[in-house]
Length: 101
Image 1 (cartoon, rainbow, N blue to C red):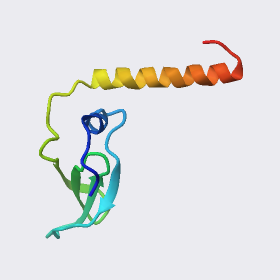
Image 2 (cartoon, one colour; image 1 turned 90 degrees about the vertical axis):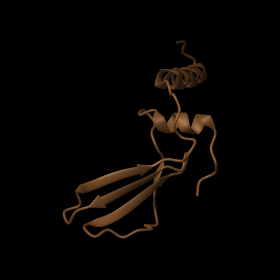
Image 3 (cartoon, one colour; image 1 turned 180 degrees about the vertical axis):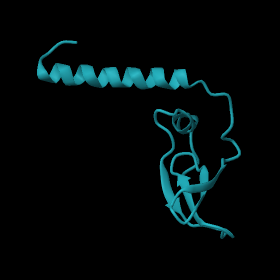
Image 4 (cartoon, rainbow, N blue to C red; image 1 turned 30 degrees about the vertical axis):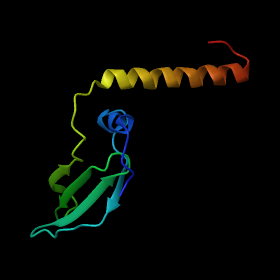
């Protein structure tokens, strides 16, 4: 089970440019059709339950979020933060190369 997370971890998971950090986890319930494959997010603890058909296509998909996962989220705020971090890193690289941006 991932650590209980900060609001920033939830923000990263909800922002589609970053998204969840999935890893395969044990299946707790068998499916009467298809192959169940479950993933858990290492940041927020969300579980994604997928049923795959015989050809490997997704036949069904469900999500189970932690109780405190849902809240109003503005992805623009997180992307702005991400952009400032990216620009700072680019400036640092430019300064090391001796160029100016």
